[in-house]
Amino acid sequence: MGAPVTTNTVWSELRVSSTPQLYISISPNLTALAMIADALAGRRRGLPELWRRAISSRVGRPGHESVRPLAAPGYSVMPDSLVPRAPIGGDVSVQAQISALHDIPPDDLIKDLEQAFGPGPLPAHWRSAAERPARWLRGYAGALNDVWNTTEPLWKRARALLDREIERVGVGSVRGGPELLLGALSNRITYGERGLLISDLESSTYELGDRRIVLVPMLAGKDALIVSLDHPEAVWIAYPVPGADSLWRRPVAPAVDELSALVGPVRADLLCALDQPMTMSMLATGMQIAPSGLTYHCDRLRAGRLITRERRGREVWIARTHRAEELLELFRR
Image (cartoon, rainbow, N blue to C red):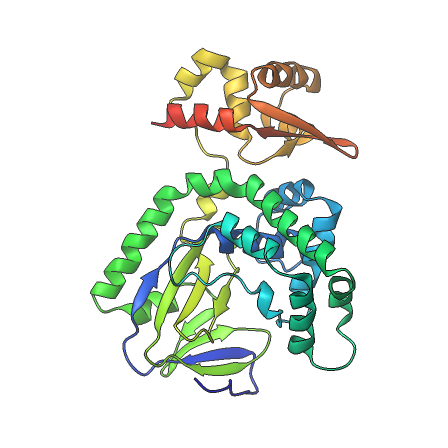
């Protein structure tokens, strides 16, 4: 595949000369990266504000500092060593992405930065990474871990949506309608006469050739999109899974009467409300319960190892524990 051809538009073009072969990968690493870009790095792509604040609150200062260069305004170039692991040889977990970051020698990051941006001073937003690469890599890996700890419960609840998307992609491929499927992935993608046009920060043109297209559904804001058009084996496109907006809202807990009988109706509602970490004030407002009463019920749930409490500045954040997730899953069956 030749070098990209620069054009004068704000679209990248993937030229398709024959019916493309579509595959699907369930790789949560790209969901975590999309949430980092939206909630931490400032590249907002439609993630609800409640989730953005919850994710931001769970990441420490080193993580916040490390992710800023990833979404600097007007830049799309990233050092090769930081490019997401390609979801083309199998699904990629968040743990695999974190391990890959830990395996990067600090000197390799510096070399990749020099290669990406050429001779002369680096862009200002990457200088801290070049000055202390080991610290920067640890901060980035830590941010990825913190983000996933916050959003993994959401990913688990999305299993039905992901299964439905696997079926939808399979039907579209078998029935010969990949053009319609690809054109409906995102409002940032259109399917024209020559192939795909993808909204991008920098314009380029690629030929699909005989490569396949791997689709990666994400739990992310409605405008999130992560693509790789230059991999020699396959093009991959990560996009918001259809129906994800239903997960941002508080779900109705199945078998809530049985759960209420076990822990009490107020505590059952409280556990169901903690779809993502929340502050005490958020919970009190959402549940319309007095702060003193909320504190009492949180104390009981904490004693039962069903929630955790963490003070961040002036706010106390509440989150469900793994034990609580298992309990809720039991009553969802």
